[in-house]
Image (cartoon, rainbow, N blue to C red; front, side):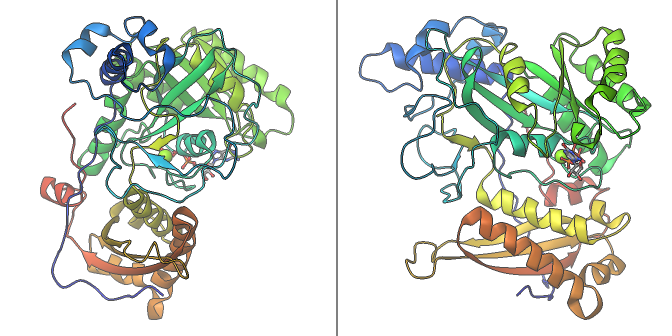
Length: 437
Ligand SMILES: Nc1nc2c(ncn2[C@@H]2O[C@H](COP(=O)(O)OP(=O)(O)OP(=O)(O)O)[C@@H](O)[C@H]2O)c(=O)[nH]1
Ligand SMILES: [Mg+2]
């Protein structure tokens, strides 16, 4: 049961985040893997890794100058094939060559996305590997699409715009029609027009990510009225093209499940096609996992040939603790009205796994602080008689138990940090700090 007390002293801890892998970094890792594979006796993440280290749209000059971080574990099963026996554990990205990332070991089952092909890999084809940014205006379904592609929820999603605040990455290792394929998806905050404080941080996150990937998946949503191109989408696209003028862009029309007839999509597609800006057009539904195979096939054709950069069972760069914070924030956003959701942050202060290995009753203890900007916001988060924070806690605990696959004891606190979304100190305290890329 969540507690509604407040922390007397601020006890913020800044958590280190890994920078999103740039195209150069991915290429560098690929080169390092290839080198490792070429050396007898060393494990590599793919047998074919040496053949493609130098090919690609990924800039090899950049690659050679950046620090290569080899992936330390060898791939164990061919892409696209289900392993025999129990489902694999979710594995979190490990930049350090083998040891688990902070809080990384997970028992969460990674579900195979519905509709993913089960066909055998076209063996003759070399592997492909690259980065894909999911970009677009807020609320078009970028995070939902990432979760659907991975078959596991790692990103917060709500019906409210500007849910995602930081880039996060998820890895899909599969078999596309172009052969074994590893796509490193980068989920980004929505491209919006607001300025200052947290808004600027979010926009920089999105645009920087877009500038540094092999291919852009630009998402728009279709609606029941199929009104055609919306001005906000146009504006978001222009921002993107200014920042990444040479990167191939695939238009992803999401939410096609709302259409009663798919033919209604045609005029919208035609309008976008007239712009002549996209390499391809792929209608999907993240909710129904419809069109995901086609999307993966299309994106695969725009990433370079080359060995997988991450082990095939890698899932994300987010630790369980990071995901827990996001899932709690998601519930805060869902439970609160108006402006307040945008002015709240969640910090996980304790993530105690000491009883997780308990055979009879595995348990993880999570204590988190919901940070708000004003006293009035605090009372809204707590609610009458603590009803709202209790509801937030109950919903969050359910998700956390699903994520961690064990019982979760969740404690929630509420704390005021005046105007944190507007001040550099406030943003820093809450971990909204840009990393050098
Ligand atoms: N009907 C339908 N709704 C969807 C689909 N994909 C996403 N949604 C809904 O669209 C809303 C926004 O989804 P998000 O995934 O949070 O969107 P986003 O683009 O990541 O939003 P920001 O993080 O705010 O930029 C949520 O209510 C989703 O449930 C879909 O395929 N069909
Ligand atoms: Mg999002």
